Image (tube, rainbow, N blue to C red; front, side, top):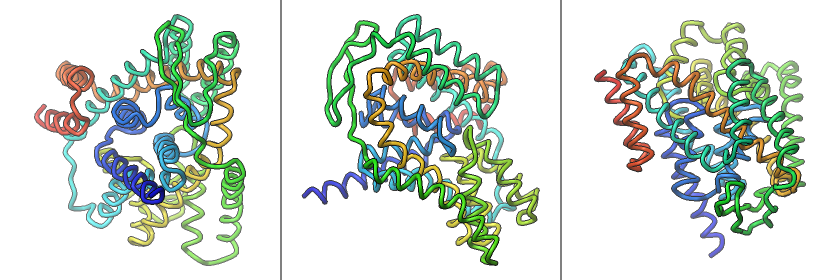
Length: 408
């Protein structure tokens, strides 16, 4: 019975992640909004605090932060297999579409209206996530101040290292400001009710660590072994599969700042190396903007250009593998640290900083690229009201926003 229940849980993770992979338009920030709506608000797999802390962890790590957050949620729900199912479900739709587009790219045309409508959808989704998380995690003037400072720093210093630096700074501010009022740590696997700093009662769920510490150390060792061994193996052999795995694994392991930051690395590994034509690279990047799911699925398109469907599979697995290993390797230690009183005080500041980072992302690149005229703002307002107050499902918001964007 236990095994049947575990298999059912894994299938549930895959099914929900697959739905999100089909509907999550708008890039990493919007993905976190979709995850919040589905996993935290609707299904309550995680509480607000655990979700914010998981986002903070993924912001520290190299790789695609939104995909890593989904992997972490899957691990909390159904162990390592759940993390794998979460990644597979979320990545499969966009990877298949990008690989197929590599074969029919000359015949595929994506209307600008549809793309713009999806950007407006992303604006509504992220705005709702910022409002919802802000109500729970930015209670009081101190947390609001930290969130505003974090948002301003990310906007004023747009660097790939800024987010990590901001999270560290917010943690230090939280440790200084909230040490005496840090919430009591929750025992692993238990749910407890407590009082937040705004005076309201909240429920905090502390999931069991999905991976043992010894297994976590093993995953971290494997991450570094592959990072060092693949280039050596590629240099010593003429095997094109090893060379491709090295190119994409290295790109996924060394990128900080999200999906868009990986593009220069991929351009250097493919176009500059003479493996992919520059025009084909740019056409594929344009198509990736119109698809749901992680931008890292762009690797499937490049792999398909280089070596057909086998190349698409190898490139996709190689570019996501570093992020998977890092999440699996760090979650056991993160779960223990977050229950320490001092760490929880720091995490109170980090939580506020995460909301500030999402607020900055709401402005740029989402608002600046989506709102070009009054009609865009009106459509975004309607979608936000339907989502936040009428509880419309995300898939309906996607369809309505894309259709309205086409008409506008």
